[in-house]
Image (cartoon, rainbow, N blue to C red):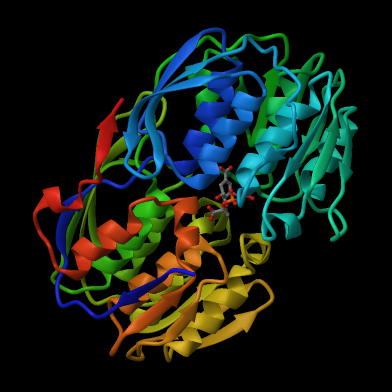
Amino acid sequence: MSTLRVKAISSLHAEFSVPGDKSISHRAAIIGGLSNGVCEVSNFLPSEDCLNTLKAMRALGANFEIIEELEGYGPTKLRIHGQSMKLKAPEAPIDCGNSGTGMRLLAGLLAGQEFTSELFGDASLSSRPMGRITVPLAEMGAKLETLGDKPGCAPLRIHGSKLKPIDYDMPVASAQVKSAVLLAGLFAEGTTSVTQPSVTRDHTERMFAAFQLSCRTENNKISVPSGQMPESCDIIVPGDISSAAFWLVAAAAMDGSRLLVKDVGLNPTRTAILKVLGRMGAKMTEILHSSTGEPIGNIEIHGAPLKGTTLLPEEIPNLIDEIPVIAVAAALAEGDTHIRNARELRVKETDRITTTVENLRKMGADVEEFEDGMIIHGGKRLKGANIESHGDHRIAMAFAIAGLFAKGETVINGTDCINTSYPGFAHHLDAIRHERTNPEDFNLPVITK
Ligand SMILES: O=C(O)C1=C[C@@H](OP(=O)(O)O)[C@@H](O)[C@H](O)C1
Ligand SMILES: C=C(OP(=O)(O)O)C(=O)O
């Protein structure tokens, strides 16, 4: 089991970009693989989650060629050969690894195929709820079996069939469920709609538009007609704001620091963290430099003494993956931070309410746990501790950031999981820990094939 050791730093002055967006990379692999030609994808995220989705699409017939590779990880630039909506039956069960997004989106895709397939994942993924997708997909006419030891959990056996369209009132604010139903909708006979209880990330809708698939959003109802063919196109994946969030928090909480994160996704359904850090007192400027498809830009942030805040219920889905590191920011801020209405955290890679609270307490923070979140009474000096990631990438990275502020050494146990979403995190952490200011020290090694 690998570990990271972190000590406090006194300044952070850096400029760099983070690897590609995980959500967008999954969708580029899936929709590119369905398209009617060759798609070049730049800044693809070569993390384990996205590589599993890419391999899944290859098992379904959509091959890819690597143009550029992040050394030791996988493709950052590739060419996907679309299958014009005609997938082949995979020869073996498909491994989704640790990825809820991969499994749920692929299940939607497979529900409409005229063959039987199986999806499985690691222990964490095998304990996450799949009923949220099997229910609407069964309503569309697919037969899905959950084969896991835990009821309603993976592995999934999917007996695909001709689908009928549904008008689905989604009970949870989940972009994965929405996307699974919309992908299935491409293979249904008629128009499929999903109504979401509040705005969730809209990368599927934007990716559909990039591939010239008609898809309408009106008052939180998203509708997709069937009988469409995705027109192949080239995709540039922006940097992942969920990865940038770790450094944004580090800079925000360090008075006198300056950080410039370049070429990062600024999709408004993902930027709630910027609003929260702004309310906490961080000084920020966003400069948008491209807004076709997915908005991309730079974020410049200056640290300041932070104060507590309350996360708004409608913000929760738009910063769900950033909550562990927001909790770290809250522990470093003066006053109370209320994180409630966030029950969804209990069904992520770990129960992130428990794992965040447990590790914050180990570091000396004052935290109250609730069924749907936590209240953090900030301002106590953090102390180094032995942190357990429990195999959860966001927990491992969030507490590496906490370690940059703690008295004494912080040891994070179980850091291999970081490759789920952020290859190169250890390199960036090393540059930050050594208080490097030269942008070149942050570059990750890319090999052209
Ligand atoms: O659609 C996506 O790409 C994602 C949606 C979110 O999950 P939910 O849809 O379960 O909220 C998020 O936590 C996950 O990391 C990525
Ligand atoms: C929850 C996450 O991802 P997924 O649901 O795809 O496993 C995450 O990346 O924090």
